[in-house]
Amino acid sequence: MKLTDYVTLGRSGLRVSPVCLGTMTFGTAWGWGADEGAARAMFDAYVDGGGNFVDTADIYTGGQSEELVGKFVADRQLRDRVVLATKFTFNTEKGNPNAGGNGRKHVRRAVEASLRRLGTDYLDLYWLHCWDMVTPVDELVRTVDDLVRAGLVRHVGFSDVPAWYAARAQTIAELRGLEPVVALQLEYSLVERGIERELVPASQELGMAITPWSPLAGGFLAGKYPADGGGDGRLAKHRGSGNPAFDRMTARNYEILDVAIAVAREVDRPVAQVALAWLLGRPGVTSTIVGARSVEQLAQNLGALELTLSAAQRTRLDDVSRIIPGHPYTFFTDAAQNMMYGSARVTRWRPA
Ligand SMILES: NC(=O)c1ccc[n+]([C@@H]2O[C@H](COP(=O)([O-])OP(=O)(O)OC[C@H]3O[C@@H](n4cnc5c(N)ncnc54)[C@H](OP(=O)(O)O)[C@@H]3O)[C@@H](O)[C@H]2O)c1
Image (tube, protein in one colour):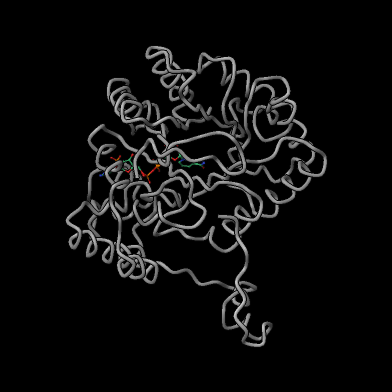
């Protein structure tokens, strides 16, 4: 696979690279990440390799990420070529509840601010960043449809939402002829497979592409954090913080990492590439959002596009990272389904 093996984003006509450039590391306002020079080098390497899909958010590095992306796109005159995606939801003004969330008032204000920072008059993809637990889904579906009608946004996606919320939005949009949700952006990696229970099947049924975030669990799957402490990187800075985005050093995760390291030795590749290659081949995964702090890390990660794991290697990785299904998912297995099919073999039709 190459960056130029473009794929349509869910049930849409938008063509994107199979790896998207994550830019949460663009800017140093959060105490980690890349300065302007390093960020520009990553952007240039990605687009020069044929990559066309760039992900940012209004919240990243307090707006620096959007500003840098806008500048790099403008300097290279790539606005028409790049699929530019950003997000709304997180609060940008302390004490003002309508300066965050997914209500109409904030979304309209957020889109204007993002367009300004990005230096453009439209977004190719506008993500709801996170479910706010209060905005009615029909208000949201109408609000983002209005943005598309107004020419400010081309397509709409949801990040970090429950499956029922995405399914309800998609159904309302379909029945009312409003703008559909074309993609779901969700955490997915060898150490975080929770979305396989509900969100992956929903995405396949409803025509929504999965674009995984933190595919290396914030760097843990690069294998640079010894179990007994230390290591150089984002997670070391926040070790023991209690924040689930940074607390990856669990016994279970090291067990998974050990198998990934064994596979990496067999194929003579960095373990980060093994973790990414596993993810690129998972059902529903359309474009994986990679993160990097330097052009060297990015180059190494893009190397995963050319790595094919054997079926036996994939099975070992699947097995060690398997999640407990829990109720009611234990019923959705071959053994339980046989009780319904009378042991006859039945396969569900899926579009090619
Ligand atoms: N929707 C959401 O809620 C959400 C949440 C998070 C991220 N995202 C998106 O997903 C993108 C990727 O997320 P992420 O940055 O967490 O991805 P990730 O791939 O899990 O972690 C990337 C970090 O791992 C380390 N790393 C990456 N490649 C490496 C390599 N080859 N060798 C050694 N270390 C390496 C670097 O950090 P250090 O060098 O500092 O260790 C890098 O910044 C973001 O940029 C953003 O666009 C979305």
